[in-house]
Image (cartoon, rainbow, N blue to C red; front, side, top):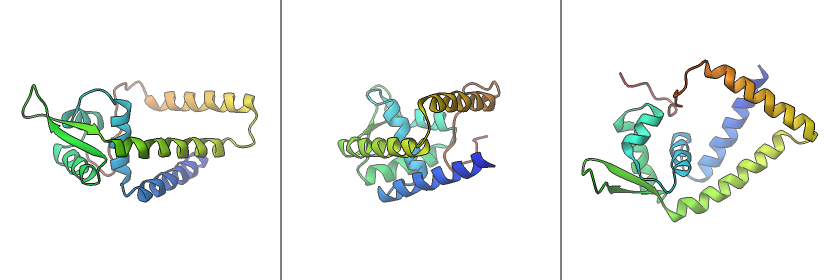
Length: 150
């Protein structure tokens, strides 16, 4: 019960931060994915595969992010059908602010905890995370509200 309450509060904080940046939670997930792969060529197909969702969904999300100036989309030089998605300088600036906000939230989560308690909590949460993996490596998060492709 506590994990659900904490999860909901964290999601509200994340949604509030996303709203201040004029992005949706799903758009934020795509931006996080792009930041983890920054410096690599990332195609729309890579995003579709990672989140296990349709081309139309990814295309819509990326188009809106491009309209807002967070990403740019260019044809792939080796495959004309593929489109590469790149982060813009505007997004990199916003991301550094978002990381600072994330660190502040993480600090708030463990305020009043001793270093030993923080270490144990981290170990416990790692075990919970591993328990939820259920041996299904490669399982990817889906974008909010999306159905799996058939």
